[in-house]
Length: 296
Image 1: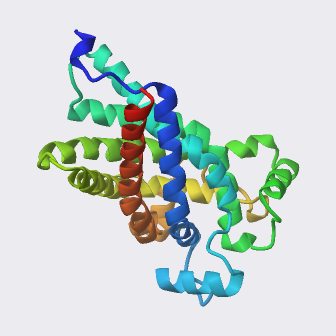
Image 2 (image 1 turned 90 degrees about the vertical axis):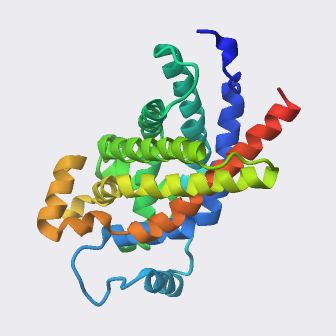
């Protein structure tokens, strides 16, 4: 297959940098919804102390704790490499699969496969920072930790270093499903939408494709996210772990709380990752375009 028939891929370092910039932009904009999402996912049963809605969660967190940016340091520290890996790995896997299957250009199936592969790679990088973030965000842990370094110290002292990998398998499911849905959807949506003729039109198409892709990815991966979040929030004081991996965890939650419990926190999550997916794609595309123009 002629390599010249394809557009020359952007060097890895540029893709990595663009993904990092896109990721930090998205997390700083949408993080409060991530806090609310985590709180709702961890709710079990009912009671006066439970959040009744997204608005109630926002109101009470601000009133009782003073900030919606609790636990943001771990995701900010990891967001740059996380999103960088998301886009850079997606591009690298895309080129790999095009060569493997002797294809001239991307198609729907390869887009999904590429996204899944990038998601699995991403999961290994973000699993431990995700655990630290969940411990800081959990309502019951308000006041338990003085910061990220204290979380690390307490986990190592009370649970052992292996605990930093709690929820890794469920994290792989979460990222494989989201990335497969996100990048696969983006390919399809951009393929069926009219080709933009202006810069503004291109921004709009990217935002629409990214937002729809983010919504589809969120719908696919929320059950894995619920299971992952509960695994990572589990403390020794809670007693024996009822599950440690995704499938048994999903079955356990459905049996004890019903199917819809697997979609706890879905609304704030989709409100974040729907438009957040659009923000990611727009910023990534703008940064890579700038790099191609000025540095390549």
